[in-house]
Image (cartoon, one colour):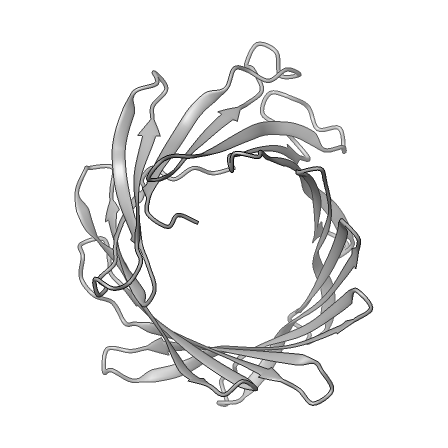
Amino acid sequence: MRYFAFLFLAVIAFGQQQPRSQTDVYTYDANGRRTLAGQQVSGAGGSEQLVRGINGRVAPLEKVEEKVLSDNGTERVVEKTIRPYDANGNPQPPQRVRVTERKESDGAKSIETQVFNGNINGGYSLAERSQAMERTSNGRTTVETQVARPTLNGGLDTVEKRNSTIVKAGEKTSEDTLTYRKDASGNFFPAARAVKESETKEGRTVENTATYVSGERRQLELSGQTVAETVKRADGSESKQISVFGMNAPGRPATGQPMLREQQVIEKNKTAGGMVETLSVRRPAVDNPNALGPAQKISEKVCTGPCQ
């Protein structure tokens, strides 16, 4: 897993009537020293993010505005405007994402997502369009998605297809997503696959996710696996342990089988004013790669208000 060298400071401008939550984000160094790295203020309507770099400077990173354009019960259109900034805080061309959800007459649901890139002249051009059709019957949901991008002649060309199947049986859920991509010859080949199984029993949820990617011969090969176990307690607190497996690990020879790379432990505890979430990580010891070393606290989030 990768951890960024910085965290962002998010400030959202809302009317006072909007419910908001504020999260102070702290990081811990190798010696356990706790440092305030940023702040997140969230609510409905939009967000403005500022990034704190390695040099300690804070500069705008991104501003997001979201609004519902229409909603008549059958069709709902939501538009999000993303305004990025460069490393010096200068505004860059914005991007718009428009999502249209429709309820079809046969009970299916269609979802169209259009991504428009802005330019320095204030105009927008279509950069990507995805169309998904979702159907559910007897606990089984299928989602067929096609992604298209503009061609040199001004048209749209389908470059990716995804087929997802979700099956629910009681407390068990299985999800299988197969992704096809177009090669230089115009043929679609299986490029990736994700298989997820989860089960909830007596407040404990176990999720097993395996990911596959296309190999040299364009055959899907296992690339990694995660096993997450979440325990929810009666007092509202929650503990989640995520074991991350890869096909190789530092200090260990490749065996062709997934090897444990690290364990992440996320603890969420309710407080009088909100919630505190801590992230700790255990990694293979240098002197004994077959055993995990002690847990190291990576970050802490202290949230007040209607925390998610």
